[in-house]
Length: 389
Image (tube, rainbow, N blue to C red; front, side, top):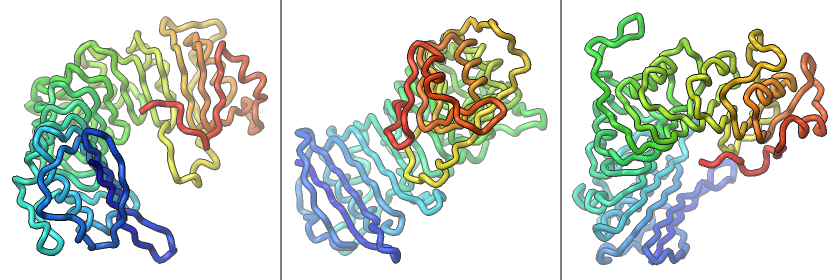
C-alpha cells in the first residue's frame, strides 16, 4: 500500500506551490491523490497500523500546519519495525531557517496525536534527511542511522549534535547545513579551545562527510571532536586553505583516508599544497556540483584561479588523480593544463564550464581541450550533474 498526498494552492504570481507526499509500503506500489489545503477528510483516524518503509515530504513553508498534520498522521499509523527512511524537505523563503519541530498538534479533531505515537516507528530508521521540519534532538530517530542530513541552517547546540553522532556508530553518510550553538569549550584568540575535550566522536564507518555548507567556526566545532577509521572517505569542503582552522583540524585527524575531495570555492591558491596531505586521493571535484533550478547565477560562471608561481614545466606530483571534475566555472586553459599534467590526470569532466585563453576572455578551442588527457568529457550545464550524490 502506498499513499501520495499532494496539497495544491497558488501564489499571487500564478505559480503552484505543492505539498508533495510520498509514502511507500514494503511492496513499493504507488498511487497519487490530491487534497485542497486543510481538507483531511480522507485521512481516516480509525485506520489500523500499516507497514510503511519510506516517507518523503516536499513542502512549502506556508503550509506548515497542513504538512505537520499529514506527517503526524502517517507516522502515527506506521506499523512498528517497518519504517526505514524519513525524508523531509521544506522550501524555505530565501533559504532562511524555519526551525519547526515535528510535535503534537492537529487540524480538526481527527488528528490529535500524542508524541508517543510519533516516536513509535522511529527505532528502525536507517536514513534520516530533515530540512525545515525537525524531530526533537532527543528523538529515537537520531539513533543507529547510516545516513543523516540536517539542512536548512537549523540551530543545534553542540552537546546535542555530539550526542546524536555518538548514538550512530555505524553512520556512513553525514551531511550538515546547520548552525552549531553553545560550544562546550571556550575559544582562545589563538583559535585553540580551553578545556579541549578528547576525540570522543568515533565515525568508524563514515564514507561521506559533507560540511561544505558550514562556516569555518561551525565546521571546527564538529571536526575537533571527531575521529575516523582508515576507510575511503569522500570529503566535501567549502574551500582549502592550510591557514584556516578547518584545515588545521583535518591535518591533525588520524586515519583520515580521503579518496575523493569536493571543494565549492573557485579560489584554489592553497590547493596544491593542501592535496599533498591525501596521498590516496583519486577523485577531485572543484565547483558547485549540485543541480540548481536558479539559472540566473549560472549565466556567467565564476572564474577559477590559483597561484602557480611554484610550478615549472615537467614538475610532477606523487599524487595521481584518476578523475578531475570541474563544474560551473570559467577556467584559464593554462591552469587546467598544469593541473592535468601535474597530477597525471586520466580523465577530465567539464560540466557547465567555459575554458578561456590565458590572459583573455575568448574561448579555448574544444579540439585542444579534448587533447588535454586520455579522456575528456565536455557536458552542458543543463544536463544532469555528473557528480554522484
